[in-house]
Image: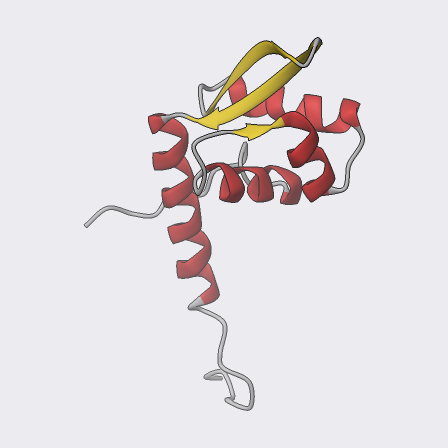
Length: 105
């Protein structure tokens, strides 16, 4: 049995949100991610760089309608890391007693 792996790179809320989106789409444009996360360009850029450094996210730049655009996509390593991180969070959440149930003394 594999022990779930908590991933400190993915864990910050904005990065977790970015990874959740990217695992469900082929790629996402920078502005769409920025608007979804409700952060500034510079904050999103720092989060994407942090995810790209270990190879979790691939960034692609291209011209569209005369403007330079950036698209992000999750890599195979990123998808695996995200799935392991979510499994670790689910395992941790499983330790929390249900509402109205007392924890053992």
